[in-house]
Image (tube, rainbow, N blue to C red):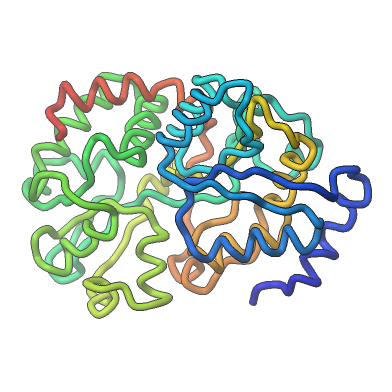
Amino acid sequence: MLKSSTCVAAALTALIATSAAAEGELNLYSSRHYDTDERLYSDFEEATGITINRIEGKADELIARMEAEGANSPADILLTVDTSRLARAKDAGILQSVDSAVLEDRIPANLQDNDNQWFGFSQRGRIIFFDKENVANPPATYADLAKPEYKGLVCIRSSSNTYNQTLLASIITHEGPEAAKAWAEGIVTNMARDPQGGDTDQLRGIVSGECDIAVSNTYYFARAIRKDVKGVSSEIDSIGWVFPNNDSTGAHMNLSGAGVAANAPNKDNAILFLEYLASDSAQQYFSAGNDEFPAVKGVALADSVKSLGEFKADEVNLSEVAKNLPEAQKIFNEAGWK
């Protein structure tokens, strides 16, 4: 159960009481497109008295807009999805370092930028799904996914997809570029079809019989458990899943995260908002409202997420992974991954 807005207010009292920023406004640039986030914003407004002004759009568009606005940008916060975009925003010079004992204490070190310019607030596992009837021995690791025995069976998104870019960058971080290139080439060979659509479309590919194995983020599948998702929910019992690398590095996790804008006119309010996103109440809502894994350890999971079972998460430093994103794109191109 989600906590009431009264409980949210209670949870934030300590933060707000010590902040002179509990008034005014906050200009939020967000590429998160989930209706359920409305509750996150309204609870913050009710608890603090701060009005959130939102500008929503695609991540790359918002980053370009903040670059163009420069010192005159009204943006206080950039909220977006995936390490690759957070790293892109940092490299563009549109974020600033944040000094917050709350964030340092609450957010695991591997989910923070090394310079504290961005922080991860929710996670999604990028894992393997399979047709239970047709695949008796599903891949147990990401490396297995590229083995010849799975030739022509795999559905996966394009190389331009940020989730795939960060996954490959994590493989580079763990195993080096040569192993990563061999993996990418193996996946291309094993594709059941040219990359197309989003993660839900990869799951639909299993249901339709176009492929027997798919790679998707966990929250797309968990959502189909919680509510009706066309082309997935009706046949969800036929789909199995594997959290890869459970006996080694653990399953790759990508982020939804945020940072304070470099020229934030309401910097104190922006930091308070990030601290709020790290509160138990907000963390619980990331799971219950959007089927994600909280960034803060120990926060209760939604039933849909909990039903996926326990697993080992990769705790690699995502700032280090971000450094390998250019190499990942180069490898994708060389491997012929469309």
